Length: 301
Image 1 (cartoon, rainbow, N blue to C red):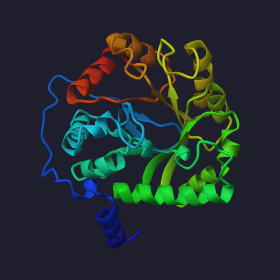
Image 2: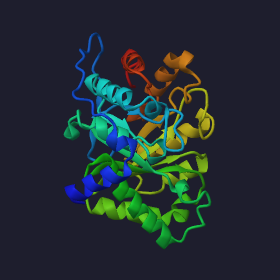
Image 3: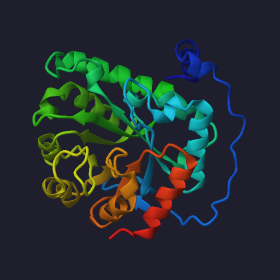
Image 4: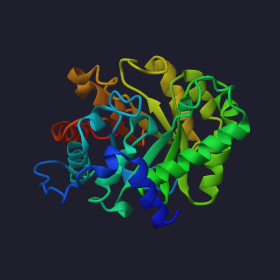
């Protein structure tokens, strides 16, 4: 895409996002007593980034989330704050509507320092994965990836996941989407591929797929908003690590249901021994700082 095409697209379809007042400059803060966040390698992807990722999808659905509902200024300040505190990993998704918002944050963050992950949600096409032909899926996937790049105003996406797979046959049912993801990776448009699962059978199937380099998978000590009990899920998650893939934990605090037990949740996650990173959807700077302190309090096993 040329810069002229990108500017024309953004000016005509971005609506409020394109016309929102720009935040003139970054707000500078000091780290204070915050410890550094460990830098980690994400499996065999060649990507090194922060162990903690800033999520943008708390209560994320219908292309909005708590982070985006806060508005452009608060969203950008939150991303800047995370960066200034050492976060280099940012977790976006089409479903959260966070691309336009993060594009504004990118005006103030050095692109070369950060890892941008986003997710393709096939359910925007049809909840029935068998309703579209492979050709229709391929067409939809190409449109989506090109749109993601335009919305973010970047040429290369660091990580793209197949979002929220839920059946043991998901890779066959979504073959058209996956074919395009692999095609774009071969072209260098995407650096690494993966999936997020919301079903234990789907997660187990993903362990057998070599192209899945990053597994976004739900884990906390209470089994809340997970694919099964910790005893059921942990052995499956370990399979990714055993074959050289990266495991990124999500729902660390049980989708916010265990914030009053966050110390137990962080200690549990840090002691698993196979999580490369974790994404937490902090909604304000205070939560970012609190989570970093917790990670430091319980060093990774």
